[in-house]
Image (cartoon, rainbow, N blue to C red; front, side, top):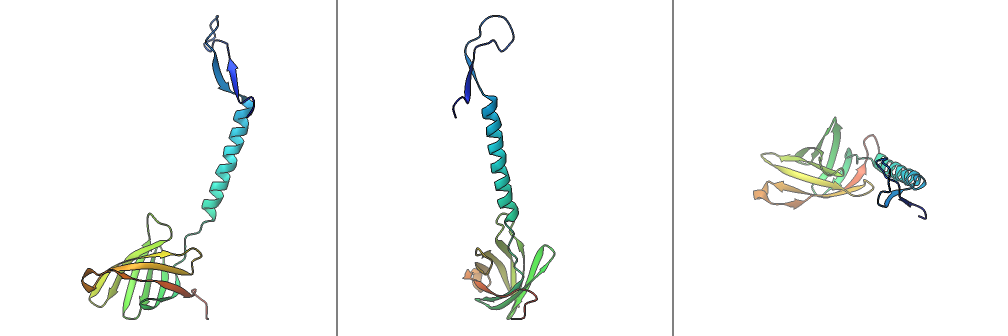
Length: 148
């Protein structure tokens, strides 16, 4: 930007005599820079505010049968044929649900990551079957309260 950097030849201490040349940013430039940064801050804030954490509540068609998840405060609980899950949103990934699954005496951990749009997820379950990792994927069948 033309005129952004201006040369100063006066002594910055106020003493008489000539100080070595110094440079500073013009008031016009700093005003424009401040305005630009505030605009960027507002745009970033808008993007953050409009990203809504996924809603895991609903009925899902999954690798392990129909999974019905209900939100209970900050946790999610669910049932599927022969088992249950209990989880919460990951502390590091906003689109990820982590928790434990139980099938009779067998149990382990799971991690689901929501696809963009909230209509499907992919994930894994750990434990049971001698610590084996198995894929656990799902597609939204209906939201809570829907009758389809």
